[in-house]
Image (tube, rainbow, N blue to C red; front, side, top):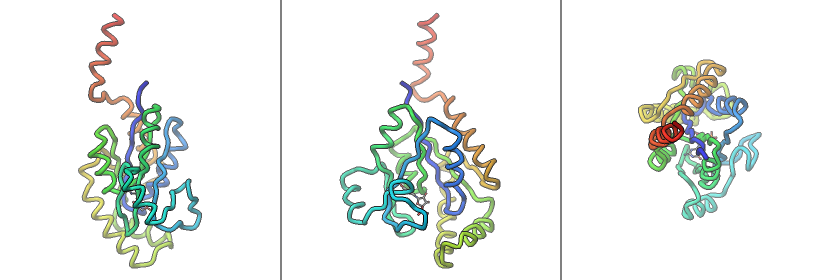
Length: 204
Ligand code: 5GP
């Protein structure tokens, strides 16, 4: 059976990557979204086990030491990690898996998982990013400053990604991510060419 593909989506907070991913999930059947673990406190509307697994720092470190994360990183002062087993099980079962993780995490996954597809969501401009972060009304001004600085630090990694999608308009950004996923399913992966050639050869 053909394995599923791993899609890693990163981008600064406020670029709308979460909303883009929700749109993409609505349109595709054979894909799961990884649920990360975090030590940050739940925000209003966050549901444990749906948005994140909310863990104490002690529990997070224990799981990290036990090797239960595919990657983990410290983002904005809190730990975030991708539980390993669901990723392996999903991909092995032939379903695609989407990870929405920061650049540090994405780079760690890239070291381990060569066949992942790395998509970076960009804001139309820094000015628009600032307006979006301010408009959310959830973060204090110093937090917004920190997120703006972090954003530039993350954008500096764009060359390590396979695709850059500018989220100017939500519909077209979601459409572009869907197109990337469709195109990636036609990619001839390492080692696949020989299999294709021999299958066609046998049939002839
Ligand atoms: P938030 O707290 O706003 O939901 O997420 C903050 C940042 O953490 C985002 O950039 C998000 O992509 C990143 N993040 C969420 N889950 C993970 C994860 O499992 N691993 C890593 N490395 N980053 C994550």
